[in-house]
Amino acid sequence: MAEIITIANQKGGVAKTTTTLNLGYSLVQLGKKVLMIDFDGQANLTTCFGVDVNSIETNIANIMTLQMEDENLPDKSEYIVSKNGLDLIPSSILLTVVDANLKLEMGSERILYEILEPLQEDYDYILIDTSPSLGSLTINALSAADSVIITVNPQLLAMMGLNYLLKTISKIKKRINPRLGIKGILLTMCDTRTNLTKVLSDQVSEAYDGKVKIFDTQIPTTVKVGESIYYSQAISEYSPSSTAGLAYQEFAKEMLDSEIR
Ligand SMILES: Nc1ncnc2c1ncn2[C@@H]1O[C@H](COP(=O)(O)OP(=O)(O)OP(=O)(O)O)[C@@H](O)[C@H]1O
Ligand SMILES: [Mg+2]
Image 1 (cartoon, helix red, strand yellow):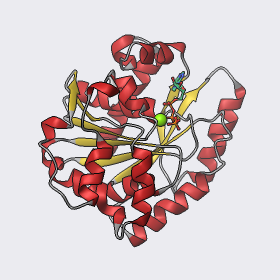
Image 2 (cartoon, helix red, strand yellow):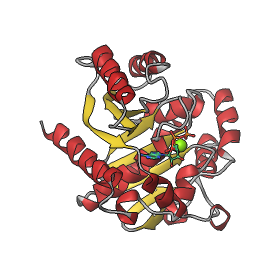
Image 3 (tube, helix red, strand yellow):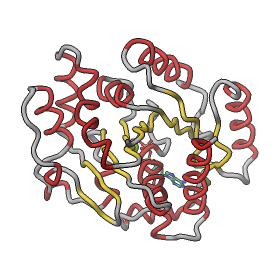
């Protein structure tokens, strides 16, 4: 049965999408079966994956709408796309309409889980990429998850908003999804040469260590990430020896190791 992991932070541009794609790719390299869900109307993950949004008929917005209306879902082959052994349910701008409709629907927090539950037996991990907001879509993603990975960019006033996110997670755990746990905080876009990264990452460690795990692996900043996105590849596919590519592989291993213990 797949573990469902939501990658979240309501702050924008903290490498949620980059982490989802590269963790997914690295887990596949380690022999795991992985499905990613693009749960953001910006559809960045879908674009990074290299899917032409116009070429797919069914995306997560359609599936969410059918599930909300209690209608039958199409065969999974119609909404799951595959590349390099990695699977994705794509998104589209229509997901923003779903966001609005979810607010009006009773008991709507569990809609995504209802969609993912029957898919769990096909995978080891289901990774959900979320939008930079704590609106109904992200609440749905957290309600579906076994655990959360919080990505934090130490350059972007890392601490701001983190307390609010942790509080939201604890409310969801209490009220909707008792399975929900915090896997840890991943520091992304770290520039090890600057003192600021060190000061800020120490600050995060001090504030949350003991309460929330902070992964030992930090993802360095490198121009290779932007280039890999341009070529619709994972960083370790585009440039296996790049610092960020190696770091994401290391991170995948650290995550697996932390589960065994
Ligand atoms: N390690 C890295 N080195 C350099 N650039 C990076 C790195 N990680 C991410 N980026 C770049 O930072 C930008 C934001 O990353 P990404 O889209 O993954 O963030 P996000 O949290 O998903 O953003 P949003 O909140 O808008 O969904 C992208 O342009 C991405 O290419
Ligand atoms: Mg994103």
